Length: 326
Image 1 (cartoon, one colour):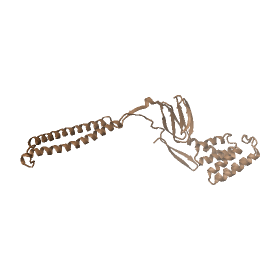
Image 2 (cartoon, rainbow, N blue to C red):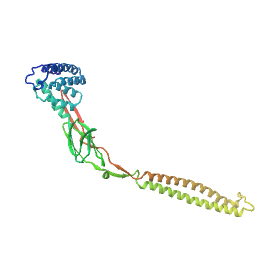
Image 3 (cartoon, rainbow, N blue to C red):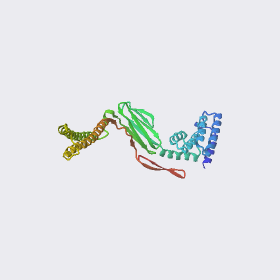
Image 4 (tube, rainbow, N blue to C red):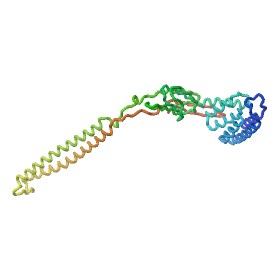
């Protein structure tokens, strides 16, 4: 069936040009060149080389902008999954209605028109903030205030609004074929969008710091007690053993030896406890420094749109599409 339609287009091109507005001002040489490129494109199309066919048809329209050639471009663009361009070319092809086409081809064009309408969505974007810049999918769209509407392919699109002194507005807009998604952009001044955050709740660094001080203090008390015991031991030795000396292995000196050993043990414990406390103090000090308040701005991406399942009939089958926000 498609081969027959392609041949019919070729025959339509060589039909009498009387009362054909699309043929006015076109020379025989231009028609011949268009015919040559058209036949070349038809060969590519029948071989399913749609990109090459599209290039040949586009070259043919430069010689003669015939609606039938435009429609062949539409067929290529649909096969290449470029619905927006296909819709634009179809509007050009149908500029003169059904007169440039054979009946079956014109019916196919109308079917494609319905198909493309379901595969193309619109985004209507408005913004009231003066001098704000808006982009759609990375391309400049408008300077606010204003409203712009754009045709887009179904799916996810990025809308960004920026202005100095304001928090950028970043939206992910999910649009569904055949529908219009309305987006009203509102920018928030930086001084209203700012908030102070901390790495940890404020009490945690102070707890570590204070705990370290407390532990170090306990170690200090133990150290004082150990020092007092050792001083008492030294005074006893100086008093009782300075002249004749003392044999500390004798039983009468057992308490004195125990006092020295207790002092030495408590001194070691004190050093360990003070070390642990010092580590806590240092860690708490570092945490206090790291936990200083930081001003942040919520610049997360806001998502717009809803999920939707669509079935688009096409030829003997159809296309099932799922669009929306997930």
